[in-house]
Image 1 (cartoon, rainbow, N blue to C red):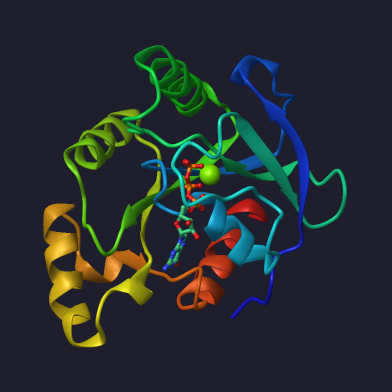
Image 2: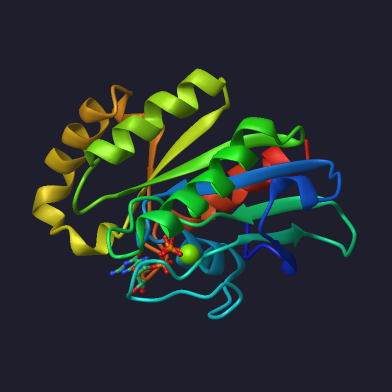
Length: 197
Ligand SMILES: Nc1nc2c(ncn2[C@@H]2O[C@H](COP(=O)(O)OP(=O)(O)OP(=O)(O)O)[C@@H](O)[C@H]2O)c(=O)[nH]1
Ligand SMILES: [Mg+2]
């Protein structure tokens, strides 16, 4: 199982069209506050590589991080989250357009990690996003986050429930806790395998 990933911040973009060509990319997709930036930090075992916040809307641009040696052009991409109700309609629309435009048109995008809150389960907006990503035909891995918030005695039932709502097999969901480190080595291996293929 892989140790911490070497990840280096490259740049922030407000439009996918501004991004240079790369070899391969994986994007972190999910509801605002689901734990995308925290997951990125856990993969790198760094506390403040990506900015996180207990308030939704921490990531407002397309933030890119390169894997391995400098100039590898193999990127992990942290996107703004969807569904942050407190942002103005105009702001929400701008963030969604940014992420959607990136996901729909990025040539080097090899796969998506779609994060779902393991405590709350998939929301309506999560399920709409599942369907939309499916329509794009992108390889998606579901990552359940914040497993440390689910009581151990409830975890088995929760796994079955979450995968049935996502209409996927229960083994197809990676269960993680960025806070406790569970499931993180498995995801590191997956990210390396996809980006370095
Ligand atoms: N208990 C627990 N809290 C977590 C975990 N992962 C993230 N959080 C907390 O959830 C909150 C949101 O985390 P972020 O990583 O900023 O979420 P995000 O998906 O990047 O949010 P946006 O940038 O707004 O889209 C923070 O308070 C984190 O500390 C986890 O594994 N366990
Ligand atoms: Mg974030």
